[in-house]
Length: 102
Image (cartoon, rainbow, N blue to C red; front, top):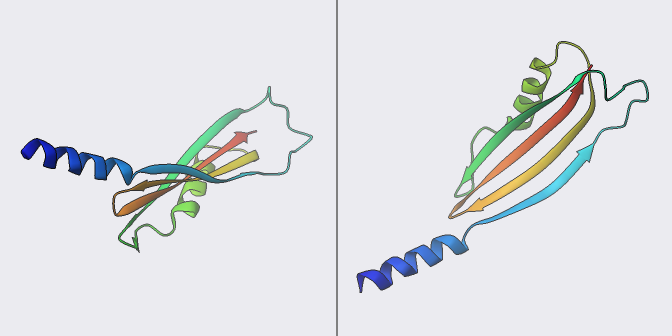
């Protein structure tokens, strides 16, 4: 009986999880920027939503500020991905920002 109950709980927990990529945005390309010059910088920011209650609602701006902090010069070719990981009674929204620091 205990094994069946454990198996049922595991199956229910596993079925409640999924992962999706909603959007990917690429900024306009700068002709004056060479990929051989500069370095790529990356930042991630996360928002957790539990039972419809969102925490850290300023996560996108926080991620962009983190990206800017890694680059003393100018950011070019910035890409943005919006991902969601669905979990049991909650989900996690994630933004991954990447840019070329010149």
